[in-house]
Amino acid sequence: MKPEAVTTILLTSILIVAVFAIITVYVLTMMDNFRLELAKADWSSEALTMVSRLISSKDCFAYEKKIIFFDKNTTEVYAYQRTFPNVIDLRKFSLERAQNCLRLFDEHHFIYMEIKLITESGKIYEIQNDISLLNENTIKEISLPVKIMKDDYNFEMGKITVLLSVDAKYFGRRVL
Image: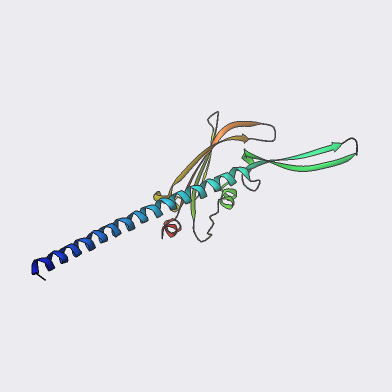
């Protein structure tokens, strides 16, 4: 075999291996970006679930009404409680209650929260926990329209804006 032919075959083989290596590195880089985007989407849905629980659960901020009903036919008295989702009870609006409601699926990590309740008349109620927990890379802000109950008879329309952030280890674990 001629030396030129061996050189041509060798160069062709090196070129094929180099192209294959470049494609492999590109695909792996794209997979990292894909995993990062998937982790962001996962965190977004988890944050939305937490905020939905915050405004819909009687254990969180949702308004509860005790109802007593007297049935004239049976002379029975019925008492029950009804929870109104998306209706915020101002008497329940506290940092302690928010921290109990906004728990991560993994309890070994911390969450930063800033919750603003803004009425139509412009009054703002605000709670937040330790600002040092804020991680700029995982901030998720969710705003939803709500009714705000001041007491059992007076309500006002408004919106709740919740800013959530998790520590980098919690978020980074999803990417790996």
